[in-house]
Image (cartoon, rainbow, N blue to C red):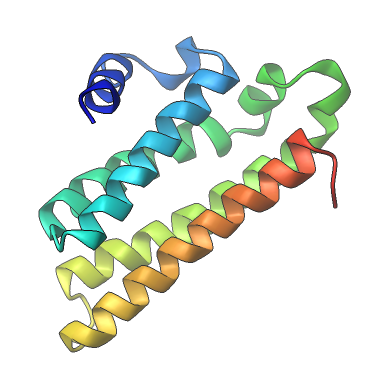
Amino acid sequence: MIKKLLLIGLLGMTSLSAYDLKTNMLLLNAELSEVQQGFISSNMEGVNSAIRRFKKDADELLGNKEKIKAMLPANKQAKANEATVAAQIIATNTQIIIDAIENKYNHSGKKRREDAQRAYTYIEHACFRCHNIVRDGVE
């Protein structure tokens, strides 16, 4: 846990673009794990903080096709579109989580939890799908 917090702290001081793809993915993974831990421990302040960082960092890294293309190996650069699709899915679903935390639609606690947790699984799926296609070449 301390290593994860140290990694987040050190990497959080500079722009994601200053690091290689693997380092960026490790950072996003740590932030997403922090969101999950917040859900498990019912720490909505922790979820809110982590999901906002994750949203910003995922958009910064994955939302810019040219930036992600430059980080991919030459034989994988054509797959940069997959990352931008993942970024769109992530943006939509992180906003669902934020809206649920803020009770934007005045839903019950149960409905908000279910919506937020479902959105989290959609984010995970977008990550796995992108990894399968870009990293492993499986479509």
